[in-house]
Image (tube, rainbow, N blue to C red):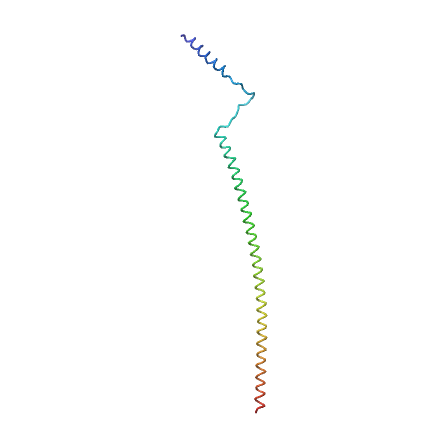
Length: 129
């Protein structure tokens, strides 16, 4: 076979194959952009990561609010306890002052009784002489 006939035969053979496999094209002026499997997987992983991190941040915020509430209640209880301790201190001080006054009164009364008894005994001793 000559060079020309061989070349023509090859081109005809290729042309007929291309014509039988022709696929209708969509009407578009831009190239179709399709994501590869790796890019689709990356996008899915990014969206899942974002959702998980959002939930974690929500959990952290809830924990911070709970800690703040507990701290506030503990501080409030501390102030109440300090107030109650001060009230108890004041009551005890008042009671001790009252008991001190009673003790001083009883001591003066006892002193007066002793002096009275001593004078009475002195008077009896003088009259007996």
